[in-house]
Length: 429
Image (cartoon, rainbow, N blue to C red; front, top):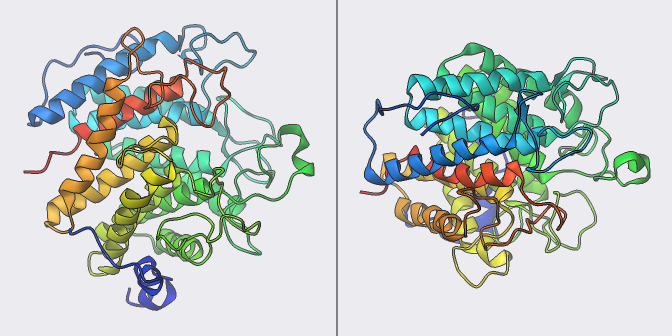
């Protein structure tokens, strides 16, 4: 395993080379509508965890407002008369993760059944007819050979299947995660220049005009797919997954690590290879959170290779320091990249918190405060009939979505996903 010290471009060494010193001084009724209420928690939770668990389970209960009885699945929007109203992978994955985390914090029979019910339907997104190879399509039941398909979707879906596997011990979900990664590895990697394509069209969100658009590498996909590779390595010990995780981390460190020590283009004005960027040249926060989770996972999988742990702490430190400021919010802890992105960032930070809390390294308390401060913003926003459909600043306009699109399942689920993740970890002692 020591060969990786030479073959992987290390995040921590690049940060030090840039002159950036500093490591931190230092996770009701449920499931599909109609599920039974779990009346006990088989694991002892702290009062804070119980509060967050209750918020998460209540929020899941409110998702019945999006339920499409005819289709037996969720709509993407509260009011949606579209020809294809059902939630896509990107719409659905925060709810998938919420159910996984609730079952992790409180593994009652009802919570585990909720995960299985959702995961079993999630398998219906698999498109066996996709060419040149099968993958998880954006819409349930897709069977079109030339359907545009997203490599970040497959990463997020694969990670959610991994969490379902750990929550339920159902091997079929591990296999689905492996299927997702096989599609990513064979179809998503730019074999000429490196980097992960965003979609199978290799273009940026141009719809039917994809052939008129420039090639587009996605930082979100790279982060999601790196986390999936790391998680699969941890679960299977197959060096194939480790090699791919290392390859993607090395490419990211060489190409999209900026002078501040987090991921974006090195120069926001660079028109070359890079990430899916916001207007200010920043990788969306979901990619950042996934990269933190990937490094923590490798740290836990191979503790003898301590540089993974160091790199995770470096990245987490720089994200707490710089990302809130990058969103141009005066509050030092405030994130406003959109709940669908920020919730994944906070999940990644909680994975780092869990490691630091268990090993008494870093500054776990600062990470926990960073997450709970943002969770408090969700609770403070005016709820709509007990739901959480808004951005964390209280606005119904969600970054990354049209301004006239409101009532998203994705936003509700991303918000309660933060509560569910916090229910899995005890607060600092």
